[in-house]
Length: 419
Image (cartoon, rainbow, N blue to C red; front, side, top):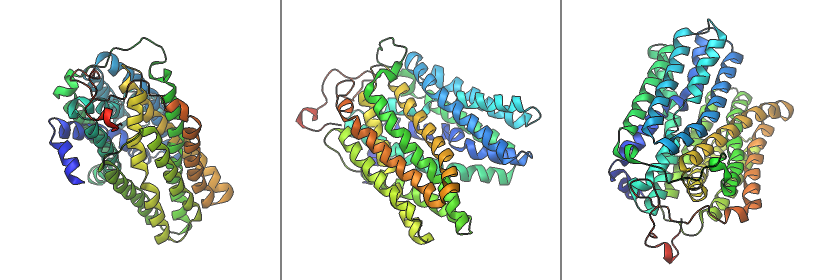
């Protein structure tokens, strides 16, 4: 298993691109906790902190596909680095100006969110030209999903460390400065500088004109909803058991399950259409969420949380393959950015629904939102099976150095080894 991942990391530019992207995404991955800690340190209420975090999330959801389309049109360096700098300046403005003017504070987080660089989609657009073979690209997608779990675990710890050493304002400044350095490392690399999107058909809908992509986005809205609801339900469960540390254990178990699932998924080569495989994975994901409604004792609940997380990273990794197959020619970065946006909006909806559900029916009802989200995601995939069965282009996923798919069929594809 480890040998396959080491093979990817030994490929020229691969380790730099993966590391640079993760570092560049730190500001986005830690923004919500950093905003909350800063707001509270400045004397603001939890309501204000939540509102600012929500505005940042909404601004990011709006900005990602727009910037993704710009990357497809103008290349990565012209978009990623200026966006990273503007996003960092937005957070710097919040850190320096504070809450002397609330409109200025909201404007700062809007700028920071809208200009969050689409590094995540950009990396997935680069993998084919860096790694060459389709099997290696698919393994890289799995490694990417696992690395995200690591980042979302380490990132908040880094923020709290910076807050304890200096201050919440310093944490905002340092994290965003680090993010700019990560983006700089990516855009100065040869693959990023030379990558060009395939020629695209002019269309105002861009990537969204693909019916297969729309079906996938509809499903992953509900996957995001399930995950978002668990964060709220976990807090309620911890309150029921009178220990805040219980929440940390549940989230850690969920992340550990995702790490294990993603590592195992990427360690083997898969045959058959990825759309069919995705339906199976999402069905197992939904099946893992449903037992959380039982809300047993802490030890058993921690085990259930770990099991629930096992199929999350594989679902995300498999969705990357489906996105690449259904994205219209010349829209791959935008398509990946839409997936990020839809997942994030779904997560926000999950947090919004799980709270009232818990107040009406208790903690079990909050976890029921996660189960319902998983089931809804599966229903969308099953009901759009015919749409997803027809890729938006040929199944050839290997691109040349310029970003276009090669004309020649990859060896092995004609022998039943498809994505």
